[in-house]
Image (cartoon, rainbow, N blue to C red; front, side):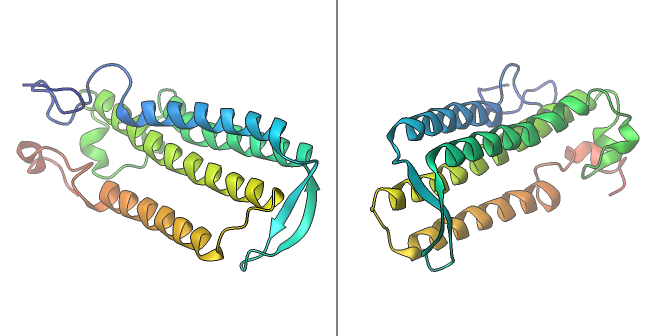
Length: 190
C-alpha cells in the first residue's frame, strides 16, 4: 500500500512519482532565496558589510551591487552543486557512483529508486544550505541597516545548520536511509 511521501508496495524504498519532498524543498528554497536577493537589491543601502569577524564586527565594507552579485552567484553555484550530481548519474558509468550498499542500489532494477533517493537527499541538503545562506544574507542586511543582533544568534544558527547536515549525512550513510530491504540483505555485502 502506498501513501504520499512514502514507499510503495512495488518497491519498499521507492519514492512516489513526481517531485520528491527534497526536490520541492530545494525548489521552494531557491525561489525564496532569489526573491530575498532581489529584495535586498532594492532595499539595502549603497554600502553594506563586506566581511564580519567572529565577534560580529564589520572588518570590510562593500557596495550593495557587490553584495547582491556575490549572493546571486553563490546561490546559483549552490543550486548547481545540488542539482548537477543527480543529472550526471544518468550519464556516468555506475562504477563511478559512490553509495552505501552500492551492489544493491546499482542493480538495474534498483537504480531508478537509487536515483530518486539521491535527488531527494541532495534536495534536502540544498534547501538547508540555501536557507542558511539566506540567514547569512539577512545578517549582512541587518548590519547594513544598523539592526545588530547578538553575535550568539549567528553561532547558534550556524551550529544548528552544521549539526543538522552532519546528522542527515550520518543517517544517509550509516542509518536506515540507504539500507536495502531486509529480504535483500542476505544477497548484498556491505
